[in-house]
Image 1: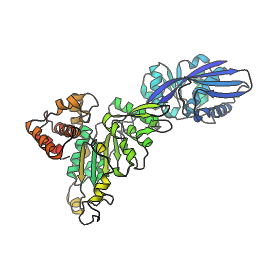
Image 2: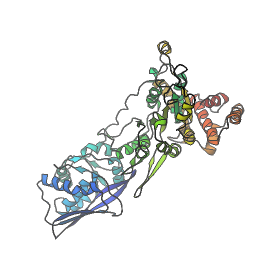
Image 3: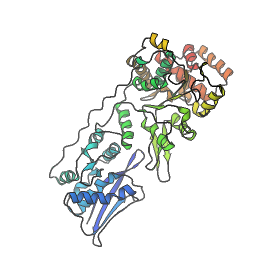
Length: 493
């Protein structure tokens, strides 16, 4: 007796179709899973056996072989439990064999037969829709998968419910997508007193998706400013929401509410490894930079990150994607994030405080910030010093503009950039001829750039960085042409 079911194996963000073939043949009783399965897949034998026993179904005293085809593709994860169980039930006549031909299934089995949520429901549902298959998954991840829209999604809570659905005894209703989760309210920029220069720089960074590095003494407000940046960004488009949720689904971060409208804000600790930051590990899972896709990546205490970890950021900060290569897997993840980095000026943090500077100044500052390589520093379009604010200034300074007011200007500037460059594109993406056409300054502005380059030895990347930031400043001002005041402000960063 033979049967087959369909599921997926994940290769980075791609869900590859896997055919679960089951053969029940005469011979000594055995239950074997083949097809380059890892330990989590091989352990499905015991979970399936216990789940069937909970349904009062005993395995036949025969030789059971499960083949996961194509056999050369690595298979990882517990989501193979449900398709293996269904293929076995079809081979033994409990489930009609033809009922499995039009569905794709994922799900982990508990020992009592309950279906447990698994990662990757959204990309798996996309794979089912591409092949015009129905989709069966645990009820907990059904609202997430239902956002695909082009396939019927059914979410049984137990293996028994899945069997009754496929047998036609108790058909399950199609799962409806849950409403997008309301974006959590970000802290308000009105809370930031003083720091007018830093507030302006944060606004420019948000408007053009420019990576920004803030250097200042402890307590100057760098983390406070970074936490308020997501509240300045425009709402995500439906395409961005789906793309972001798919990456979070692969990492198992999507709750029952399904898709989210909140832009990601990821703040990994400085002890993070290369695999944690850029992706990889045993399953070549997405890293923090991909989980921050379409959002903000905050790297606090930047010089404290290991040097080899920081250097891996150079390529994705420019290209907007990262390729994770391992012996058996090569996966490319999107990584279009806005990087906000913060650093103290030296190890003690008080280099610029005359009353508290250590005896090693100014060499301690050069040594400390020297941990950040020049090529990586070049990726930050905006670099600024954040001075401390004294108590008198905090008490005397009223709150500045709130986030909603600034966000309105940022959204208007982003709309101009989308019309100029295309959907979801920003001034940070300007390169080559496109940069020259969009950000060519007037004669006075060109003269400013020339004199700056002669005095400070400006590199080609530095020249492009100035023009990109100047173009964003002009967009915020509603100007069609980049002019000398815009260039002058950009040179200050």
